[in-house]
Image 1: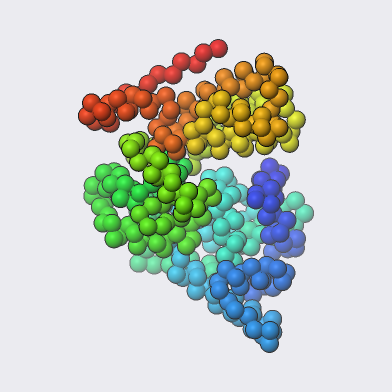
Image 2 (image 1 turned 90 degrees about the horizontal axis):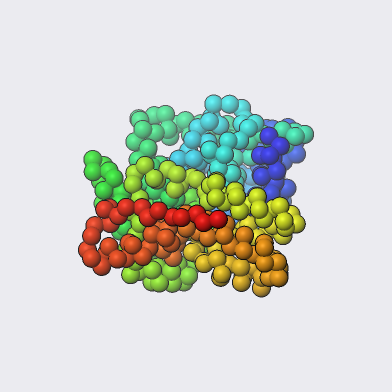
Length: 366
């Protein structure tokens, strides 16, 4: 629990602002009443509520209650699988007092931000409450007329989108449709059906932005930079994942790999804590974009994070980064690993189908 608490507190610096240091309450009105003026104003901005100076607190409360319930009724079917399953677990108990990384901490914050979930703290215990009025909406939506069963394909589609965001950074909707239909011959989508879903999900799922023909990572790109990357890699073929790769691509992270832990252990051993944290954060960004080891060390030296005169450390750091880079599917390689790309391009020029590509063995020199 202590580790979860630290992660929640540190997540985007939002922990201290969102946690309510009091015993949990269970009605939507009571939960909203626990927030301060700053949080009220944030929720009013979220729902586009224009407040008159003449309106008292009771009227503002009424408007927020109505807006949150209406928002849930409209958006409940456009959630990620993690968001939906977390809400379903919340309907079974007065509150959730533990967190599983299977839900993802981003999931919790995305639901707190729209007034669906409220985070209370009693001493060291964290409690997450779905207000009673919202529990009824979840139950009415998911437990009647087999809606939840029908919704499973859309939750799976959300996993495809999240996997593709991690794998490519930027990708075309037509390509998503192509892979989905290839993997689901008995449950085909049309481009209209897919676009309708993406349009609705774009308002609730925090990981992606849909714009024109493209979908891109929300926290990494704007429309201009997304189009720039798409154009830059347009001549490369996509790495086409198999169905069994979608789940790990959606949920497993680079920092979960053995190679990353080797690099992390080495950096933390020799570099002060604050500095090593910044270096490792930069490494994760560099490796998914596809920076070479020399480009990375140059950037880190320019930022004052690495000492270029420490040849032993620089050589070992480069060695670990090369291993990590060779084993990471990156955006500038359109989802391929850098060590695969030359073979992929050669095979494409010779018109050999990509599914016939044999993974290229990587030698881990010492």
